[in-house]
Amino acid sequence: MSTISLIPSMSPVKPGIQKSIPLIVRLFFLADALVVLAAIASHLIAHYFGREAPGFLRLSYESNLPTWYSSAQHAVVGTLLAILAVREIAIDRRRWCIALPALMYLFFSFDEVAMVHERIARLVQAHSALGQSHGLTNSAPGMIFCLPVAIAFAAYAAWSTKPYWQRRRGIVVKCVLGTGMILFCAGGLEIVVNLVKTHQFLVSLETLVEESGEMLGTTIMLWGVIELLAVEKLVVAFDAKGIHFTKA
Image (cartoon, rainbow, N blue to C red; front, top):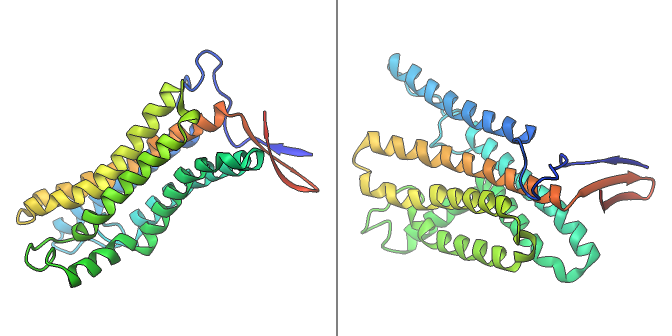
């Protein structure tokens, strides 16, 4: 049987706290910076030559590099949590709750490429006064409904999976901070930007903070999830009978 450990080993000094940032997390932090810097550089260069910035790199556009990158980030977090959920449910079906955060992040990934909340926003605008008389732009009409649902789901997922976070302060801080940043940036700022929509500089600044904050929050969440799986000693073993999830 050959085994592959998906998660780096932990320091035995304090459970749930690593001495250094895992390599994959450092690479994602670097990728966050590169995606944002590429968007800023393309905007500045295009502005210098009096041209429109290429849509492929713009943070405010959909179906481009920043969107696909964010989707991949969420998918990595969701997949790691899903692997833990598969193992835990196989041990005891009553542990199904650990699948909730996995489903949430996999949905975030799907939303990035399928533009679910944007479609909801267009639906709300067409059938309510939010977009017509109140003049809400972007995806704000959809976020007014989607954000409370996302917050409620995240809160329930955290409460129902409490046994996995207890006495693991470092993991809790990273997961709460990361998810909180995602919800605030992707949802809250999408609504708040309507207060300054007549000021182009502030709108551009909001877009930068919103998109970069969401990427950073996802990477911080990934860090917390990696620490969680490490203290859970998750190992994936492959043999002739298939894939097995065991403790190290």
